[in-house]
Length: 217
Image (tube, rainbow, N blue to C red; front, top):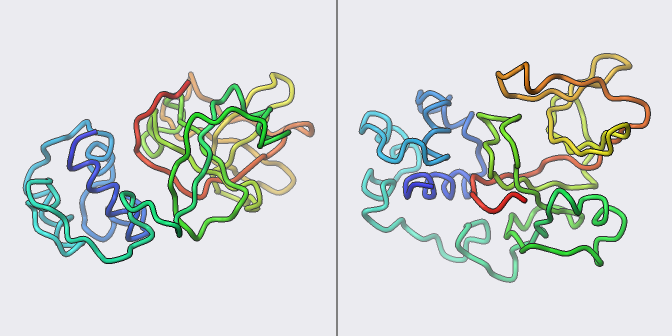
């Protein structure tokens, strides 16, 4: 990820806003923001950078990383501050989801992801392994789930598909008595909407995510 991408991710996290909200408030197109966050646009034009910097009340140089950001004292939500207030979500592999759900303490943990101290206690993290939810959740993004957070229409969930014994991260759509798992990718031939069957199960709801590129296996 580019330096500006890291800095923008940090600012979004600390301000507790999404890229979609930032796009709306700055009039910077959402696809442009996602290209910056993913590192695909490491040197955006000044006309893009200036309104973002103004929104966060910092200079263009601070957003680009050529000057240090102002550091708020004792900020528990900073991505760089790992103090006693921060929570940790165990990062597990997709192959270990079943084992983790059955017995979290016996599952192999790849690493711990520091996250907001306001999250619940039944959290875990996965790394996005495909492009089914792009551009909003790019491949490699860290997804943090809460098993206790109830799912509702249009939330993003982790589901277990019984007939194939697989796990999917999708947007949940509820239409009357029917529930669907919707991919966000425009590639409808590869990623299709799926009707939830009676044996399928919603395991957890997304509560936080990071544009953080790690080993997704």
